[in-house]
Length: 79
Image (tube, rainbow, N blue to C red):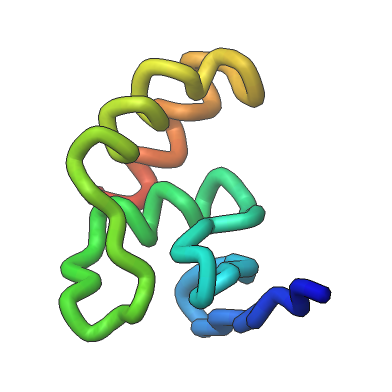
C-alpha cells in the first residue's frame, strides 16, 4: 500500500507546516506558516510550489479566513 512521506518543517519564526514530499503536497499549516512559506525564497526546499498554487491560495483565502485576518498576517510578515 501507499505510505506517505510526511515531513514536519519547524522554525522559530513560523508555525508548523506538514508536507508530503513524495506527493509534492502541502497538507496543512497555519495561515501564518503558509503565508510565510509562500513569501519566502524556497529554492532549497524540496516542495516545489508554482505560481498557479500561489494564485489559487490568494483567490481562495476567504474560504478559511477573513480578509482582515489575511491582510493582518501579511502586514505582520512584511512590517
